[in-house]
Image 1 (cartoon, one colour):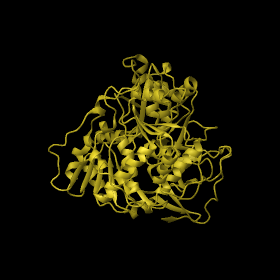
Image 2 (image 1 turned 90 degrees about the vertical axis):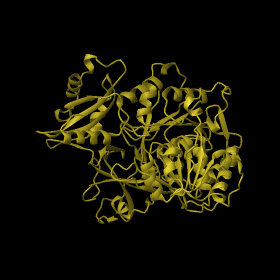
Image 3 (image 1 turned 90 degrees about the horizontal axis):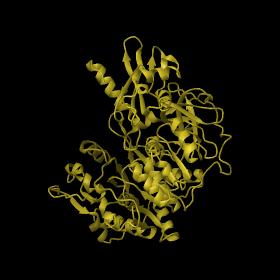
Image 4 (image 1 turned 45 degrees about the vertical axis):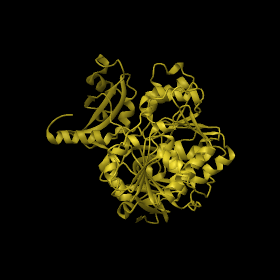
Length: 578
């Protein structure tokens, strides 16, 4: 951990546009996350905690299933306090129940990306030391090679297990056929270890031991995406996750009457915090969508009167560009927010003009339990991360000298707050690189470049290493991408660096076109570049425009610019073109 000199700039000021009536610090319960479900089950026993198409799980039933599964973990799988348990599934009721059962057993959740294959799972299982796993049956084949070796017990579920029988739809949106499929595990039974179906573990009816975990107990290892090397486990406690979940709901003014659409993947902090922890803290209702489908999402919002939806901009582009969207009754939506990428002006204008909705951009990372900076609802700014939220001390420093920079100057964003992870799991080298001290306080280095404006709002320009150097002129891809989203023919865009013999690097735009625009004159590469020349400084204008059918995206909907950049670099080395 680097110690900054005592001459660093003093304490940051709070934005003059702090939400009216809110205190500087949020009052966060000093309990475990499990206690939130216990409280809600006593307050609202018959209220739907989860809606899974026409199935509804009440808070009382949810608590009962959590207790029985926690008892099974402890009494049949030998789970002890501090043990790690893998959770490998797409969004479904079992994901939520398993997550809280692991917490109820005083153990540590290790959420796994359902797109991971065996090699990626092998690293996480070995690194975390997990001996027990919950897995969707459709994914078990990838996990099977590890079962009986590192993993001793696996509890599997089908997504169909908690769906209503066909015909029992009570007017709910139709269940996709893939959700009703059941996976045979014949031939996959491990030579060592145990494999049990969810229903059998639940039917055992085992009671758990008394709950001992508290606010400061480690409860989750969230593995980062690992753009370089193997993913690293971020250590979160009940307190770090609770601080972010409670703070976000106080910030947004949500109540137990809120209805949350949970479609962002729950293995990721965006989906986990906004689709599980926050609504369960409130005693609100979660409407589950296991896999992104814009038509089905609109159906669920309309049918169950969803009031709150946190989503990356890519999902909003998909759903609100549907020709039939204006025929929908979406008046129930009261809050629309998210982060992970800047909301393009063209989309933000459409949301405001057609639906009267502001997209409330916020900023967070796996390491910060998602909620760190946010725009105030009463005064949001476009393409902006927002202001420091409850108890957060966020600053901008010079990335090399680590000296704090004054307002308006571009540097690395660093932050200190109750929601920031305790560190990386068994990785002191990564901790040393990621944490510094300023004025005696521990700050996390985000690796994001940004600045603070005169109102205390943070703006990001890009990742620390994502910058194009064209003949000495620095181009920030996010700025060019935001402009391209305003082009009438472009659906999505990603800007990367391409090698140029004269300039060193030049700007390349990889774009997808809107339906019906293929072959149109205004949608040609030269026409798009000319359009950019009329709106950007010459050195920022793309010199190359590549058309693709779809941009690569992560499970959370973020465009994977790194994959495109790596492909471009590999093509240059091989002498070919992408």
